[in-house]
Length: 112
Image (cartoon, rainbow, N blue to C red; front, side, top):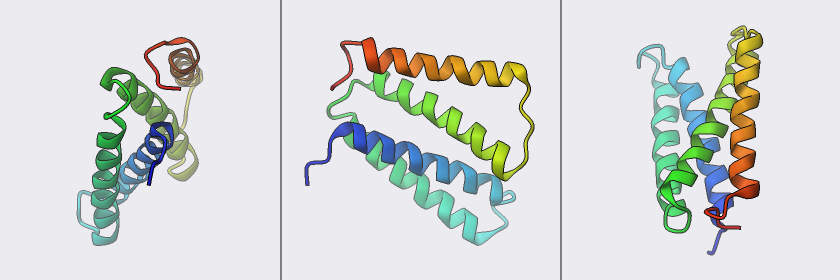
């Protein structure tokens, strides 16, 4: 199966977001269901990221991974856990998204 690295990266990011969301729900590893989901999510995420790194430079892959992951986790925290975001938080999210877009649209380091 020949899955494009960009698709693998998206799947890795989504797995990491699921794992981090479950990490909050583990309540300090006292709840087994969320703990198992968290472990599976992180294992999946890092496995997929390892496949991505065969074709995308580590710096670029990690910048996209962390940038999109931060944005998604922040949005999940806002929606699921009702964590408030102020104007600087929204501004930071916009800047992170802008950085990811610049990397993907203009960098010659990214595999298109």
